[in-house]
Length: 101
Image 1 (cartoon, rainbow, N blue to C red):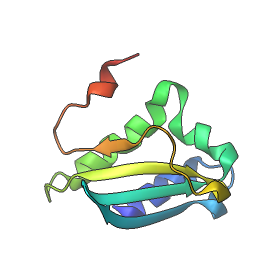
Image 2: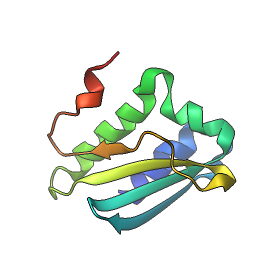
Image 3: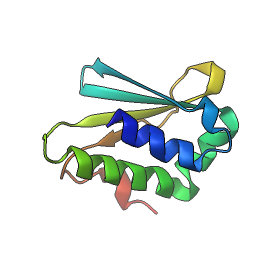
């Protein structure tokens, strides 16, 4: 899953050499922390979160076979702090945030 997110983010970023994905565990399960250059953070989130939602959908489809729930967080560049919105990926669970446009 880490490689999938890294590939997608690198393809979209203006500075792909600064894209990093680290995998760890948190209280909710596997955590993927996507670190990008600060100027790429809004590009990866996209207008109204559409780009990151598409990435989450691809991640959920890839993870569906294993039944594992991933949490995806975006950190901007050197700050190392996760964006306000933590982005969750679940196999087939609906996401309450996706209904807002």
